[in-house]
Length: 115
Length: 114
Image 1 (cartoon, rainbow over the protein chains, first blue to last red):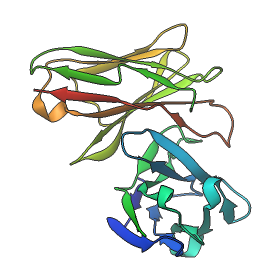
Image 2 (image 1 turned 180 degrees about the vertical axis):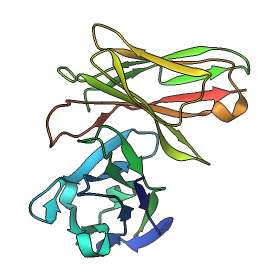
Image 3 (image 1 turned 90 degrees about the vertical axis):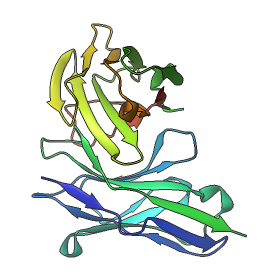
């Protein structure tokens, strides 16, 4: 069965600093991987996705993520965070049944930005 | 705006009651998913429908049921409600049959059982 681990429950960074959120997955084949962001009281917004091809994927809001098969990781990065990036971030892996017919989510990482 | 509409946004009800959550998928999406987000369980997949048929089932309780109608909207029915059912319920939709699809999430329905 697939699973996702986000080892950091809470991360605090200064505005303008770089950010890396960790995600490790367990999956039997080539995974479909996603990062979603959830702002307080809001739904989930897709930041970026990896299905195949280039292992460095670009997303919205200046985020990128790198798929590393050897490490079973899909870490999310941003070179310079903004106060508006404060939110909860979820990594997810798609189902073994083809596309993303169901998603298995990690427990999330809460990002706090300090001035 | 993801294009997925969920109603109501908030719902407060008593234990033992039954409620219905509604989801309208994005135009053209045939697949609807329901997820539950709670503090202790995190985001959990409940059930998926594709073009009116149940496609996949996750950790959905027997007290819960769902269906997808011919116009593709979906309803999640929660009955004999318990305090522990208090959670944020998300609906998502996607186009199946393509390898590079993604799920778009609604804003969620926050259910409070008192």
